[in-house]
Amino acid sequence: MVNRDEEPGRVASRLTGRRVTAARAPSGSPAEVTLEGGTVVMVKRGDAPGAVRAEVAGLRWLGEAGAVRVPAVLGHDERWMVTERVPTGQPGDTGALRFGRALAALHAAGAPAFGAPPPGGPAAAYIGAAPMRNAPAADWSKWYSEHRVLPYLRAAVDAGTLRREETALIERVCARLPDLAGPAEPPARLHGDLWNGNVLWGADGEARPPHPPPHGGHRETDLAMLQLFGCPRLDRVLAGYTEAAPLADGWRGRVGLHQLFPLLVHVVLFGRGYAEQAVAAARGALAG
Image 1 (cartoon, helix red, strand yellow):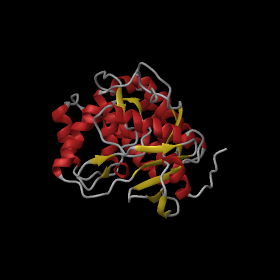
Image 2 (image 1 turned 120 degrees about the vertical axis):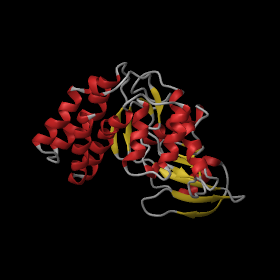
Image 3 (image 1 turned 30 degrees about the vertical axis):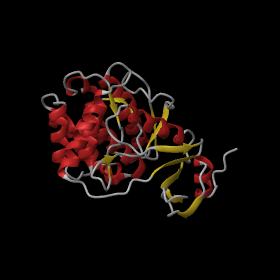
């Protein structure tokens, strides 16, 4: 049986086979553990069933594309994972351009279907603390409506967080999705939660996005997530991306459509404070 209350230093030693010389475990954050020889690693506990397995499978699937660099998994079990620690630095224009190009290459690596989980990853995954189901489908607009927008809309309605007229507006977006989605795209290999807090800029200037809930999706979704809460050097990231893989006409008008899903997740997790942003994204989607 895995001990969920095991001390992080002991976890790191057990999962890497190396002696621990120091450990620092801030409350609510992954622990920082120093191994013999000076290597520093991060030790993270997954409280939800299957969360560690999902994240490990996701990091490996992203890494296999040979495009975006992600933190290496050094060991794991059903409750704990140990990854490399990335010394952080400041983003620069060159690194941002490279990240944009690498993100385009990651998306181009593809996925078997929209909603397809990583190989070995569970269908029942998480985005942050919110449950997220990966259910493969052939049609993006139907899948996005049924498995990304409507589940969180219903949860927000059940909690009384969204008003009736706001709910109707978002339902109207779902009904019009086939017309709003733009030209058909093949399933892209998405990071899945690519907001600014999940873009870790290394001391070498390279971006390494941790904590993915990856799946097959529309490539504009990752780009819309980058724009949701602000990303340093975003103009350079987008320039690098579009240089490597031009986007379909009208993509800027679809940003709100792709932001609707993460905003509804925030409404469910954090309440009414994000409802107005979700409604504004829905209006923007309908306006095109």
